[in-house]
Amino acid sequence: STTHFAAAIVKNPLEAVEPYIDPEIRTQIREQLRRGKPEAILNGYRASQIAAWQAWMRLTFTLTDSKAALAELLEFSANQERIALAQNSVNLRFKTVQAILNRELLEPGQAATKLNYSFDRSHQAFIIWSRFDDSESDHLHLAADRIELLGDRRSALRIGATGASLWLWITCSAEIDLSEYVAIEGVNVAAGTLKPGLEGFIGSHEEALVAQRMLIRSERKSSLVTFADVS
Image (tube, rainbow, N blue to C red; front, side, top):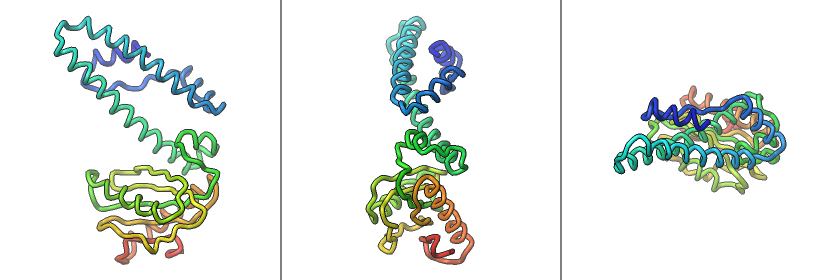
């Protein structure tokens, strides 16, 4: 609520505000998702966001007469909100994919809405990982870019599993030919097979996990392994 947001900022101005979701809000969100109307959730969020900012600005003008201090405080608040939104979005996507892989979320429409990714086609999964630290994650995305260019990509989903590991799914009509994949030094790729539907999304990822484990345990010098190579 607005009161929760303002109180948290006043109490701990240097810390991110914890999300406030009461049971009624949670029920409304679930109902709108069930009806296939996620835009209603966003509209409600935007209205709440505007109201919260208006209340917060009114409060800040009662705290000090210094224009410089006000400008610094409002700029800090805006930056904190942007950081929180970005982190929440990434975390939500990761948790959603985890729920799917654990077979806790098996309703394709709901999963598609959360991830903006269609599950009614065939998917090929990849696990991309490296020995680089978090600051070198661009190498993982570069590898993903190269893989996506090899097939008749219709859509793709990327999820950062860790700072040094990326999960990739590609929807396509035929399995991607990886013979022309150009490896990136220090980056490894494990691929599942092409499988249909939500179960295929899960199954192909599980195959990629098997291939990844086999490559890690083996003495192979190759940086690319497919499930067909180890099955």
